[in-house]
Amino acid sequence: MSTTASANSSLNTEDYRLVALISLIFVLIAVIISAFIFILVWQTKPRLHTINHLLMCNTALATVFYCVTMKVNFAYVLFGQWDTSDLSCRFRAYFAYSGIAGVIYSYLIQAISRFFFSVLSNKYRRLTSFKTHYILIICQWLVVFLVTSPSVLTNDIYFVPHVFCWVPLELVMHLAYTAFAYYILPVVVIVTIYTYIYVQIRKVRANATAASQNSQKRELELLHRIIILLGIYLTGGIPSLLFMVTSIRLIYMINLVSPSVVVCVEKICTILLDREMCQVIRAKVFRLTPVTPFATGLVLLTNVPTQRTVRHNV
Image (cartoon, rainbow, N blue to C red; front, side, top):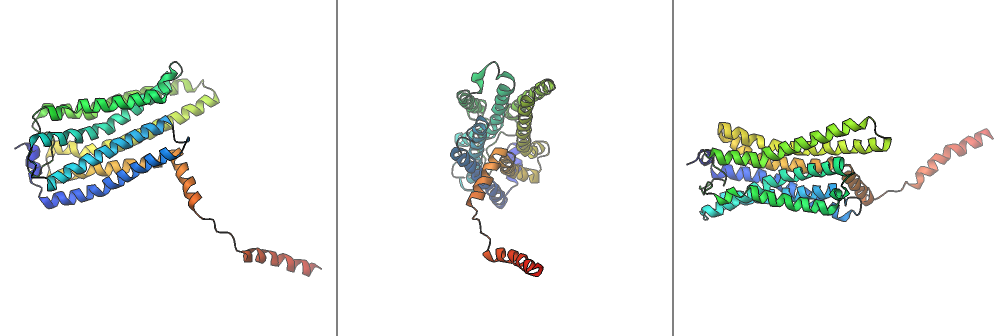
């Protein structure tokens, strides 16, 4: 039995049920918020029909995909022990890894989009079009399903009762590939792109006009928002790294819950950090809130002292 399986086997069914319940709560919140983002962007024309919000919806789609795959894995661990097929286990791992990578790579194409707008837009206007970004999104998902294919093309993942379908810890090469392809590579590219954009903006800002400086300020604010959201999402992988090093049962339980919690927090912050979306939500809330008129008695009271004063003076 693999190291992962050995650690997982120490968890009983009640442990999994508790972890699954906690995870389910945060997953449902994340899915509801993601659906809310879709509906809000779809209904608010043309204010939220921007490329930024298109990419935000793509990240929300990746979040929903990830949440669904995680719940399917929990369901199989708790109720699907009749399915002992290794191939079925590999496909569950494949889609779960695709959900994880999908979110990370959605942030990567956001970084590429910012590079198009900040650096290349003056020379290549086509790169800032919706058509280009639809192609980016399609390419992102093709890359995601390609880089995660070793999960289903190899025999490294196999069925173990009451154990999640993941790459065993003793398969170091496959595990290293998973960490590199799903996390390290896209994050390094994202950081490189944003660093370059930041340096370029700071370099030309001194000689820029007032309008250009305002545009660059908005660009920096957008970069700051995306980096915060990416950082929140990446913190969900810390328990996984700790478990690889320690194989402690408690850390493994935290590892099962933390991605759901982090995804939920990331979705909440997605709305709170987006100024346009917050303004739209605030306007809709105020529009639905009934306005209670002042009572006429208040007006009469304000007029009484005036009348009395006039009579006294007379």
